[in-house]
Amino acid sequence: MKRPRVDVNLEELDRIIERGTQAPLSESESEKLKTALHALAGMLSKPRTTEKTENVLEQAEITSA
Image (tube, rainbow, N blue to C red; front, top):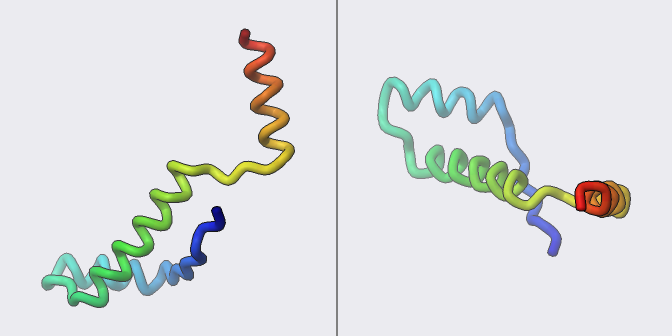
């Protein structure tokens, strides 16, 4: 299953975080941070695999068995 593309503007996220230290975040700012965080979490929990990675992982399992 292909993950949806999420465009992240790091400078904008940095500004949102900085403003968050001074005042509450707006709803749109909060949504941007949540979207970026969820995209990152999705990438970490489900690493992208390629044929090469699968072969390497299979070899590692065979060697460790």
